[in-house]
Image (cartoon, rainbow, N blue to C red; front, side, top):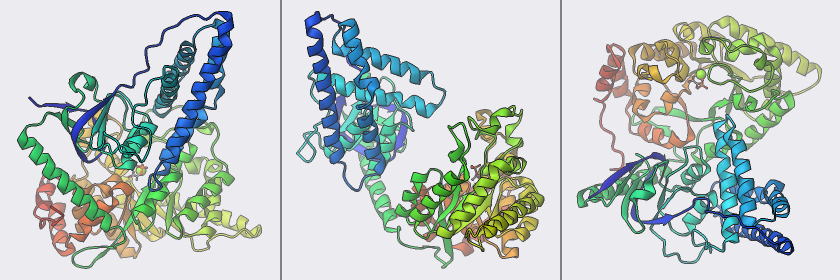
Length: 586
Ligand code: PEP
Ligand code: MG
């Protein structure tokens, strides 16, 4: 009888094959006492285990394929650094000497102490770092107990596990790298979340993966035949013939689909009726810019800068801003970069800096956020704008102001910019004298009056995440009202359409950088509403391009016109479903 287990699909794709089970719990460790003359030998045994663990990790690092994400090397480097850290190398030795106990026990005590510190942290990301401690500790423990490696750790040699799907309670990033060498086609873990290193690695290695399937080891045995669907987060044990055939067909279809998508990389996004669409990428962290080039985006339509301010006590100074932007601009090698100025407040609170002195507002989403905060605290905003201007000599840069609700806010920004330019001129500091300033349309007031805004700006970009939140009067982080979040609501469509029209009238470009632009089911509607610039997450860019190349603007404009008169989102979806079917690879 087949059984289906559900978890969190963290890396898409389908794997079909037999299971190899890996047990990676912290081993059961027992305490025993040593005679005084045995203590130094025990210390040596511990030091040897550390050395072996280090050598093993270095060997794995050497075998990371060049084409894989630099993140992978970084994860392993983190573990190598931990193997140099006195918390793991010296503390257990101190413990062995003080309590005259075995090395395994001393290491376990130190591991428990470190993990309890991580457990107390509020930050979800930092809490997952306790996994790193466990990974490193269990590697050392394996050497102490002379247990064999979990996967065949001689990269390049033939592995009996080729074609297998790995099941484990948890995996290390190094295991994930070794999986590739062993020809493993997918994996499932009992623990872990979408931000765990292992999940990130699975995505960059293109291994279908599901995490967080609690008690999976109870239901699955070595050599069981399974289907792992990383897209939907489902594992089917012992599938019947029909299910297997269906999945094999789906697997072939997905493979062809992604292979076809990759072919689109260097091609322009042009519709069937020859309308050229500008496809740009959204980035947050500095490292994301590599992926911008990988998918062949035309530039960055939204660079969120608030991440520079998070998890620290003091806001970044002008030099840090300047260095960061300069690096990104140079890495983009001439592709245009749209830097969105600080958008803190609401769900994006920071830990330190001057903002800590303010009480949290009752309705933070309606409070002192983004440009409102920046105008109130020029000390926070000015260094950023000055740094952007200075960095603009290194490549094409535009500045985008978030959360505008009236034109006066933009006028104030431009006055501040003029003053900064004068200061720079006086000091003979160069900047791009034609740098463009645009605004995000994400407050309904701005969307309704988009025509007025368009007259004062070089470009507009629609932030649908906030525009929908404010139009529907729902807090975007409140689960209880999530059901009202509807990008197809006629009110939302009319605001989007009105903004695009305002841009056309003033002859300025209008982009969309909210999540709606990156969701495939809305692409054709947005094309029909007149959107010609999309800024989306790099991971979905090629899929959006695929849809664009299969679309006819003439047809979509007619349908979108009808959709604008629909009474609700369901009717809008029905109307858009009348568009000619796409001839994607099938
Ligand atoms: C938006 O609101 O759509 C947007 C892109 O900005 P953020 O999600 O950062 O608020
Ligand atoms: Mg926003």
